[in-house]
Image 1 (cartoon, helix red, strand yellow):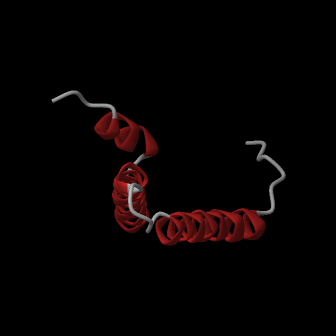
Image 2: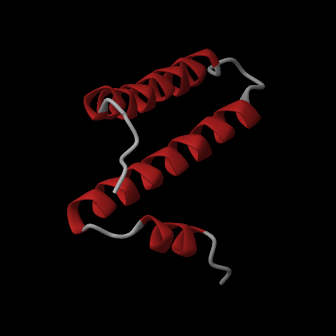
Length: 80
């Protein structure tokens, strides 16, 4: 079977580093949204943080338990 020539170490580092950078940007937005009248921005930062943490938890669960990616997509796109 032919494999894609990919540097898996670099991919793993990027996969771990990029979320940290996004989290740093979210924290920066939270710090900047401290003025009176920034309620909408603050609520959106809180919502984004919640989504970010939920996605992180799902990714950790997936990696620990070997959950297939399509099962994750199906779970995330399910309508209740």
